[in-house]
Amino acid sequence: MNINRDEILSVNGLYISQLYKNWYAAECLVLRGGHVFRIRYPYKQPGCAMEMVSFLKGKRPDFPKPDYQIQIHIMNNGRNR
Image (cartoon, rainbow, N blue to C red; front, top):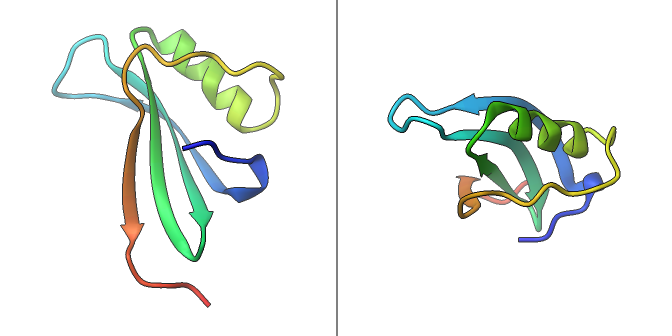
């Protein structure tokens, strides 16, 4: 899911998994087509995840490639008007 920075509602920051060791993610909420999605960009190291947080906030020009598959969750299945 390619997102634009104007679709981002908020950047939640760094997510640390309690289940898996060496699994950190940059997390953000995105509004697209009236639906709210939570997107996690997972990395093996917290520093890489913080670089992605900086990218999502618009402080970095380049997109750091995630180490694992990106997770997309539908947060609100109703339509916002």
